[in-house]
Length: 435
Image 1 (tube, rainbow, N blue to C red):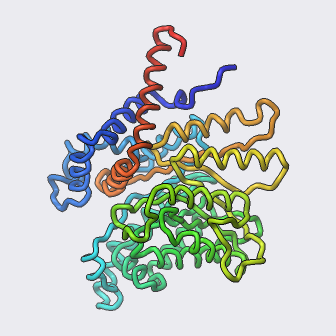
Image 2 (image 1 turned 180 degrees about the vertical axis):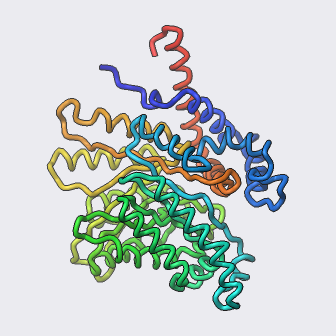
């Protein structure tokens, strides 16, 4: 039986749209002006340049970049997108509410606590920032099904959250109540929460909050995590940070939820904190992924000083990445574990909606045919990460996706070539040629 073409599971409209967008993203002539326009739209204060108030702009964006990367503007649109993904074989989705804040240095300096000013200001922060964020995130949890994930960005909760995080303070009472309500609903619905990594100015605060909620919700009784933290392999400090969190999980008796990514804030994180060359980031990512899959420390992920002789704690992993080589390394490793009858770490693979479809679809196809020949292999669980919100709310997210394509031109070219090859294959098949 001939091997199926991975991209054959995608609708033609998706192939054509992906080819158009990756062609722009891989073109030095077109990408620069496109990024400049996207940045202007993402940060505009003008109603004329906002997709939420300019119907023509909204129409153009929603049928191109928005449809490529986002789930929809409301529950009906989101359900249609999610159902479409699951119908072609994806195990589930990682759904996020697009509202977020990206800060510059001036913004950081001017941050203050709402609760330290006056009661009227504090009430306005709660009413205009925390409650809308909480309602949007609770709505996101309600849009998902058991086994799905919800990605959560704390900065979307506004100025009080930004102040607390940047000053490494506990959540304000109103924000703590909101986070608890989100975590409880997720646990009740069998949905898992990914606390996303953000800029380094607030990441230490996010890590502290993440560990606090892992202790509360990630019981080792069933070995299943509700709360996951996000670890960016492009940061030099990530192995030591993760090692300290593994030590905390073992000491305090909870399952550590780990979402491993290469990194998404190249445009805003201080450059000296990031690996000097891509090869170092790749080595960090692959080494951490292998350590987590094997539940064993290695030369990249070394144990914390207090953990030299300690057993590796229980972990659940979301391996998020677009690099074919990295994904296949872990598939090979887990297939070897399966054939040897060894216990396996709870692990799923994830790629962003609209990106690396050649990787995602190969995982879906592998999951469909796994075991057909009577050989024990890894049965991959493939997920797609996508956000929902109005076109305007999604602009900062779309800008980051465009910047990510700029910083990974080689991978974008691979995606463009894969889409072009699939389109040619379908045209040939339509005319009766061997495809």
